[in-house]
Length: 228
Ligand SMILES: Nc1ncnc2c1ncn2[C@@H]1O[C@H](COP(=O)(O)OP(=O)(O)OP(=O)(O)O)[C@@H](O)[C@H]1O
Image 1 (tube, rainbow, N blue to C red):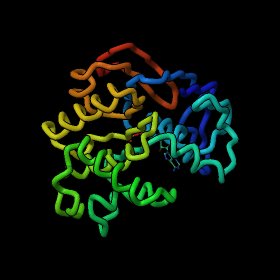
Image 2 (image 1 turned 120 degrees about the vertical axis):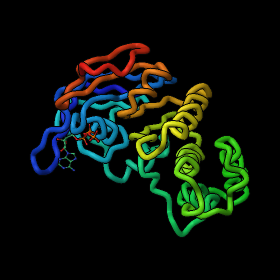
Image 3 (image 1 turned 180 degrees about the vertical axis):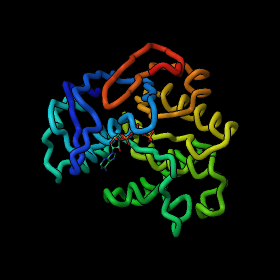
Image 4 (image 1 turned 60 degrees about the vertical axis):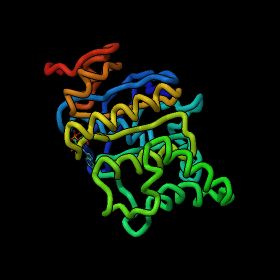
């Protein structure tokens, strides 16, 4: 599903965030990206959702070479994935229903289909009773559920999560993790950058360690460890 071949990423100011990264992620996998602050975890995710250019190497996604993809093609690629951030990034002036529906409206989905899909996904994340609430009327965990619902409403095969539990207390983080596990069990591939040692140790999945822009470990069902 995702193949990095000797990928390097360099920001406009000359900082190399990834150098010569080789990585293959198969359909259906759940992969943690771990590593110290500034290691390149978010940059690796940004390469996947095409927010940064690839300086060197090749990136293949969904059986396509997307390395030099034209800007106008990027929205079509992004429709095949959902992205979840630490800070939720909800639209504060829209209620739960409209935050989720927005993702479908921008691609001109018929309104009857929007209603069906939005209600289904909100039930899946357990927010069917809060559809009229605004983000400020929700807890952090509920806001993250809305952002997961928004990421999933278009039924993507890939979910990219950048520190999805970074702003949540341990108990709420557990709830979000069990939701993400449920998503993965339905067949969605998940790539998740995290600093949450407890979570990586408790919900065992493949662990990729990044340090100084390089992959330094890749363990099947590994724990967090300190020595990356
Ligand atoms: N927009 C940018 N412009 C220039 N350099 C950047 C930019 N974004 C990140 N960097 C640099 O790229 C490197 C990798 O950053 P990245 O955000 O990918 O790390 P990270 O592992 O996600 O860190 P954290 O755990 O703190 O979020 C760092 O040296 C960072 O300073």
